Image 1 (tube, rainbow, N blue to C red):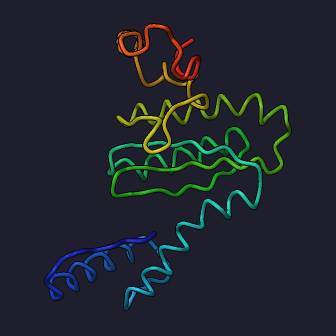
Image 2: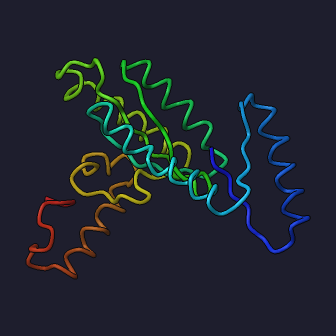
Amino acid sequence: MLIEVDGNDLEVLMKDLEGIAEITMQYDCGEILFAEDNAQKERLWKLRRRAGEAVKAHSIYKEEDTVVPRAELPVLLKGVKEIGKKYGFHSVCYGHAGDGNLHVNIIKGDLSDEQWNGSLKQGIREIFMLVKKLNGTISGEHGIGLVQKEYLPIIFDAVQMKLMKEIKNIFDPNHILNAGKIFD
């Protein structure tokens, strides 16, 4: 986990860092590193940005983009791991805790093609149902598009879906812009 603090008063920042360190130590966090300068800070952020590349190099994967209220992130992460056990998949999760965004990268690993293309969808559906229960949504940064299209009714009710279709019809009455991407 990377935690970045910002401010103009070094004394206040140091107190903030001490408080953060005290809290994280309560959760068996392991080693705590402080960036001493901008170069160290950039190296740490470079490691974080490479997390996605590491997942891609390891296995075929499916990335689901979720957002929940920040306080619900631990519940979501625990739920994703429990759903993974239920459906036999592993996941690598990372994101942006400051805005409640969690990228759930589901690893194909040893899953059969039948599981990967079949029962995994029910696992993803359960993840998104949990996201809704936690007052979240199924897209933070990556948009909906074809990947999450089938899961929209989990998050949006019939009235909301109808409203979105009507708005699209106003701006695209001939249905030529991104035809079939969200609405058939």
